[in-house]
Each structure stands twice: as structure tokens, then as C-alpha cells.
View (cartoon, rainbow, N blue to C red):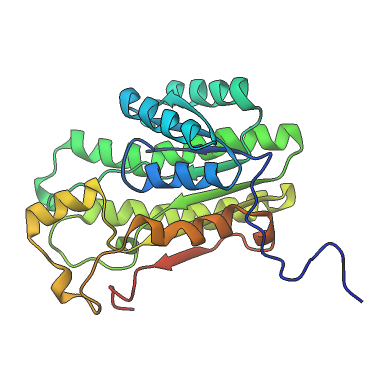
Length: 260
């Protein structure tokens, strides 16, 4: 007998009725994530510091038949985080999907980093995502609603070659642990917390690395970078209701670029 709760196959990525907040949506992976979630039916709140780019993104999503609002937010500013979530709720209701994507590299050797750069990397890559996660999580718990959170980590959390991004690697390893611990703490509230650890994907951040180091793809197993579109399926899987039994997991998506 077939259980009607689980149609065959149980793999829908329909996000109709969901409210998704995406950080770092003005460019790169976040820009793609916002468009993908909107195409899957979610009402998207696109956030970043560059308001002009957000408005362009919201307009393009709306023109394509989706639903999106642009909300400027600085993840290093706790008050800005709260204000952005308030604006998201005013526009669409409780945020049920959070994609913690905003991040910056350090691109310097550890002993040469200024205190200001140390603070900026930690605040953007770890403190901000943590504060945003607990702000969204608290509101979901108060509303008695389930939710999905996807934290964007990096394969740099697992491997570091010593060329100058030590603190970035440290913060991304911390994001992995944040994912695991919040998943355990919030499982009872049906809030799933997972992560994605991309390898080298085309983005503004990666363009900067190529400019600094040269074309390093020749040393990779398949001599190529990823296209952000190749993360769509992983993102949708972790945001969709069908992944309800998956929490505390960080999915590596790196084309075999990194040693294990």
C-alpha cells in the first residue's frame, strides 16, 4: 500500500508559499540563489549592501513572473539584520527559508592582516550569519512554524594550501560547526539547518582570486570551474519539504577539485 504522504518519487522542489531570505544577493552565487528560489515559487527577500544591484535583481525576477523585494542589509551590523527581517515579514510574512550566503575572503597571509580586516572577515563570514540565523530561528519558534536554513560554507573549510586565506578557511570551518549545532538545537522545532560547501565556482570573489594567483584550474582534476547553475539542484533539495529528514549536513559540491 502506498503512503499518500510520500508520493513516488518524493522529491518535489515546489516552494510555493515559502518566504526565502537570501544574503549577498547582489552578485555571484547569491544572485543566482535568489532567482532559483523565486523560480521555484518562493517569495524572495534579496539582501545585500549594494541597493542598486538588488533593485535590478528584484525587477528581473518580477519580470520573469516571480516575487521579490530588495532589502538593503549589512550583515556586520546587528541592527541592520533585525531591521531587514522586520522588512521581510512586513512584505511577505515569516521567513521560512534562510540562505546565509554573504561572505568575503581575506586574501592575505595571517601575519600580515590588520585587526580591521580580521574583524571584517569574522563579522561577515561568521558573526553575521549566526546572528541572522538566530533572529530567523527565534521568529520561527515563536510562530510555531517549520523552516529551512542553508549556510554557504566552502571547501576551504576542509583544505588550505597556505597561499593566503587562513582566516577565511577558519570562518568557513566554524560555519560548518554552526550548521551542525543549530541543527541539533532546533530539530525539536522542525527547523532544518544544512550547508553547502562549494569548490571553485565562477563569481566576483573567484575573479579576484584568479587575478591574484593566475589561472589555477589547470591543476584541477577536470581543469574547470563550476557554474553557479550547477548548485541549483543542491540548494533546492535542501530548501524543499522533501529533505525534511536531512539536517546538520554540509554537502560538498566541488567537482573533485579538492583532495579528501
